[in-house]
Length: 133
Image 1 (cartoon, rainbow, N blue to C red):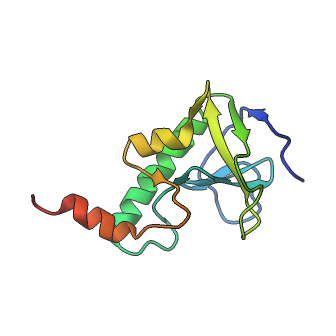
Image 2 (image 1 turned 45 degrees about the horizontal axis):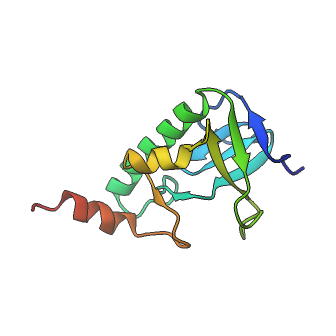
């Protein structure tokens, strides 16, 4: 069942566990809300389930924890900007609160990058960040 748009939602989010999912966070850019899987359309966060290296896993876990905290701070709006769904059937939405994107907050905190139409190699990006200068 599609989420009505715009949707102003307040729900209690936790990390998704195995089994049926209703309202929980999968990773730093994907969550379930009322039984619908939602992908934040404006960002790309590091992977946690198929991370390419330990640094990506660590950053992905931090992004996941932060997304849980951001979603739990109160009602937020979900808006479609561009495509309705991705190739995996997830609803593509920008989540915002008081006109500010939650995804942009993750980007500002170094836990995600703006969506550029493809996933980046987080292991290479994080290795560059930690290289001596």
